[in-house]
Image 1 (cartoon, rainbow, N blue to C red):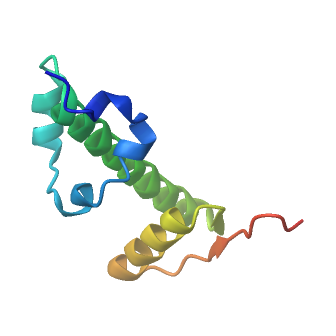
Image 2: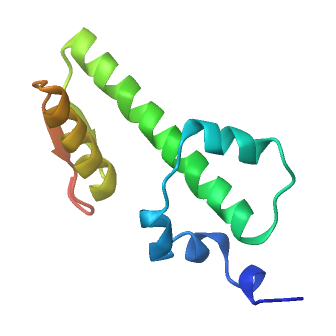
Amino acid sequence: HNDGHAEQPLMVRLKDVSFETTPFTVACIRQFSRRRLIGREADLFDYGLALLKTSASLVYTIQLATAEQLAVATDSRAHFTLLTRLIERMGLTIENGLVQQGMS
């Protein structure tokens, strides 16, 4: 049975709005990682793992910036927004910049 799922590239499938409303936990991602996944479950795992990796890298960025008194910058609007929210939520003062594409 082919539902057309695999016909779209992974990055196109991961932009599905339904992922934004799907709750993910570390335990859920861990359970997915222990099974052979296909179709939508495989995409859920890929998306959840990407969220986990992004979260871990942002936490590490905050720890490093705080410890070394560094400013941070990214060219990703999504990462800039996430980091800004984390910094505000944690009550920290870290300079966070968004590098515009095409600027030198």
